[in-house]
Structure formats: C-alpha cells, structure tokens
Image 1 (cartoon, rainbow, N blue to C red):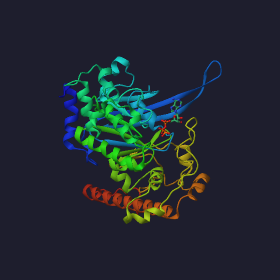
Image 2 (image 1 turned 90 degrees about the vertical axis):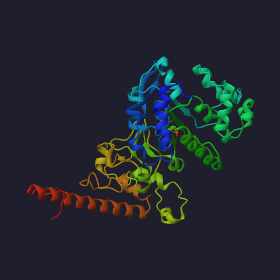
Image 3 (image 1 turned 60 degrees about the vertical axis):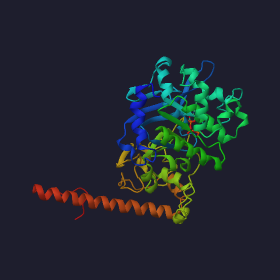
Image 4 (image 1 turned 45 degrees about the vertical axis):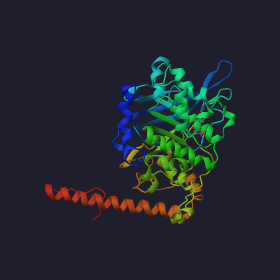
Length: 419
Ligand SMILES: Nc1ncnc2c1ncn2[C@@H]1O[C@H](COP(=O)(O)OP(=O)(O)OP(=O)(O)O)[C@@H](O)[C@H]1O
C-alpha cells in the first residue's frame, strides 16, 4: 500500500515496537527536532501600526520527538502550548529557531516546499464543533485531504473514507451525514479520521478531548492509543493538565510562560518531579489510587495567574509563584539541563535532587507568600528529599573519588566530601 518509500522507512520500525513504549523511546530515530524555537507576536498601536511590544508566546524551546513515541505537552492556559503546536506543524511562521523533520530543515519552507510535509504532519484540534464545516458531509470532510493533495487512494476516495470511518469506530454508512448529526465524541472521531487520511507520520493533537464529556474523553484517548499501536503513529499531545497525558505519553514536557521547565520520561516525572511547577501541576490532578491516599494532602495552590507573556518575569519565569524562590531565581535564568538520565529540568532549587544553588538560601518575599499556600506536608517532604538527595550525592562523590585516588596513588581531596 505504501507507495512512498519514506513511509516504510520510518513507520515500520515504530509499528513493530508497538505503543506501550514508555521508557523505550530513547533508542528510536528522531522524527522532529526543535531548537531555540521562538514565536513573538508583535503588538502594534496607533495609525502607523508601530510595534510597541511583543507577546513572547514561545520563547526558546528545545526538544525532540522520536518515531513512534507520544510526547505530552502540558501547562496552564496561555503558556504557549497551542502556539508551539502550530509552529511545529508549520501553520505559523517562527520568529527564531529551527525545526527539523526527518533531518530536513523545514523552518522557513514556502507553500510548495511544505506540500509533501502536509501529508506527513497532521493536526487534530481541540474543538470538534468548530473544526468541522457544518455544510459538508463527513464523507467530504474526511475525503478532503485526498483532494487537496491530489491523492487517489486504492479503490477510490469513497471506499477509503468509509474504511477510515470504521477504523475510528464510526459507521461507514454514515458517509452522507452532516456534523450536527453526531455527538461531540463522534465529531472528534471524524476529526481523527480526517487527520489520518494521508497516513501521516506525526500527529499533533491540541487538547483533543478537553471539549468533551469526561465519560467520552477516555474513549477518544483510548482510540488515539489504539491507532498509535496499529499504525505506528508519532504523537505530540497538548493538554492543560496531566490527567489526559499521564496514561498515553512516553515523555512529558511541562511548559510555563513560553518555556519548557521540565522534560522527562513519564514514569520518572510521576515518581519524582523535579521542577516545583511540575509538582504543583501534579498536585492539582486527583489521584484515583486509594493506595496513595496521603497524596491527597499534597495539594499545592499556585497564587494568581500566569504572569503576562508581554513582559515575562526576569530570571526563572516561575519565581513569582514559587515557594522555593531565592535571589538567584530572580536574576539568573536556569538552563534546561539533564540532571538525571532522561529528566531535564530548568531550576536552581529542584525537587528530589541536590540543590543547584545551595549558597542561595534566603527566600524571596514572594516565595514566603507562596509557601503559605503550600501544604506543610509538601514543604516538609520537599526539604526532606532535597536533603536526602544532597547526602546521597555527597556520599557517591566521596566514594567515587576514593577509588581513583587509591589506584592513582593520589590523594586529591574530593570536593564536597566530608572528613
Ligand atoms: N495570533 C496571536 N496574536 C497575538 N497573541 C497571541 C496569538 N496567538 C496566541 N497569542 C498569545 O500567546 C500566548 C500563548 O497562547 P497559546 O494559545 O499558545 O497558549 P496555550 O497554552 O495554548 O493556551 P490555551 O490552553 O488557553 O490555548 C497567549 O498569551 C496568547 O494570548
């Protein structure tokens, strides 16, 4: 069926490894690579429409998406998730940075250059009500990508559209019905069928279930999961909280005000989140596991809204709401670095890890106010784990430096080791 040799080259290995790929995505080939990606929307004023500022919607993103994996992207409203989705599907032109798809630089491709890419990269939108044209039958809607790309599927468009409808669990006989005749969940299935029509390699789903009833959300999420296993799809799934992405993602990127603050394998992120913001987001998700009853008390309430992306805070952008913020957080932007294998974090005072700026201990006033909103259990646990990790790191450093010193017959004093 695959008339395009590129299809076979990329998707077949991904298919063979299936979808339950948590933690296994590290050795797969990189499908999408994003570096230094920025999108600043200009703010113009006056008759002359002079630019007076800019909305820093996406402000320097670096990440990769590997073939066959699901990358979940989470963050509060306005943090730039949708803008990121539109940039990587090239529906928006980036202000700066680079986007590579299968090793090819696609950052500034024109309409002609983008044509083949439009087949490979598809987007599923949040609102199944507004993303389908009410005047077209679902046959026309799902068949539109074939017409746009000038592709004639085997057996004709109608047969292929009916096959796609049954793939997403809809009745192929409903080919001639209109969107209003379907429920929200069914409409989202129509959107998914349309996105899959051209056998894309990468599907970017922007809040694919947030407009749906909770009972239907699970069905659509499961459908996406099943399709990934059957078709070897690669997903970027955007959501405003962790409840949707926690079951389907292999890795999760947490965004705050246009930046990624933590990027980690799903299990690592859940076991030991390192950015205080990730911890706050996780505490906002109800945990349906009775064995983790104590987690209920770990609620972290974040003060106020996300600051304006027109003039984001200096240093770490989260410092105005963080209960651990010190002077360095206000002045120096922490880089996104891999502190543990498979876990990158941008924080001077990470959770569950050695403090990256231990000399800086005086809390900012805003941090003291934020701390009042954090349950005592969280603060105690946070201090405990940081101390435990610091002790572990000091111990490892001490034992590591002892061994080579013996071998080399040298006695260089280990940094941080205790006498
Ligand atoms: N076309 C645009 N012109 C100007 N500003 C924009 C435009 N699109 C988005 N923004 C701004 O960029 C910021 C990021 O928006 P974006 O929609 O990407 O965030 P989001 O995290 O997806 O939020 P939501 O979940 O509410 O959609 C917001 O402050 C938004 O107002």
